[in-house]
Image (tube, rainbow, N blue to C red):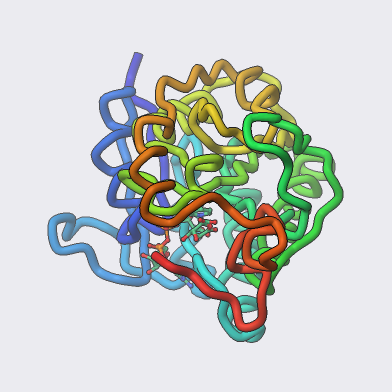
Length: 268
Ligand code: NAI
Ligand code: 15L
């Protein structure tokens, strides 16, 4: 079959750069979009999510969209509103107008970041746990999930919302031992989210099969995702360097970690 054409927004970012390398072997032809130019991809569409006409052209003729673009940490509300909330709305509108039927939305653990941290390895946090955003950023991801729900129910556009944990080449904090998503597992999960049938609007957590997992991967596995990686080989080194998480420390009491203090901290 012909390769499926997928619009990858946020293609200049950390995750976008990793996925530009890891998704094509699954048979995708990627169309790239970011507000920043990409040195090694001059063909990428340089557009802001505020540019509705550019979005319409960008989604025209694609089979699906992987939506990574947006502000990826906490920021002033007005900026989050424009990039993450209005930007995601603009993209769904473009998809509706151009007849795109499938979106994979990069949600975040911070949509439910104030959920108390469960025991390591319990896998206890379900996808239907109440929303508890830890930041305006996390709030915007919950709204993105609700936009996805609305566009499924009203317009029949399917979405998998992936509440990504920490997708970086390797885990660098003790918290990440529980929520790490290795880049190859991220590509596996995105491929499953792009190809599974009848997803409607499905919410999944995005992580590898970590020994210290905090959340339930059942809905992700139901898409056909079979994670291959586990952060455990990094555990001894990280625990020796940083010590175990202290639940009495507000930075360590919740899923969202250091986003759950004011001002939020990010040690990476
Ligand atoms: P990043 O900050 O490296 O990349 C985001 C990209 O979006 C940047 O290249 C930026 O130029 C682009 N962008 C921002 N606002 C834009 C706008 N208004 N119009 C067009 N492009 C815009 O972030 P990263 O780590 O690559 O994350 C990608 C997505 O995944 C983000 O939506 C983030 O919230 C989400 N995510 C990432 C996690 C991770 O561990 N990397 C964890 C949870 C969620
Ligand atoms: C996120 O949502 C961020 O985009 C990413 O940079 C990490 O901070 C990640 O969450 C995390 O919780 O580690």
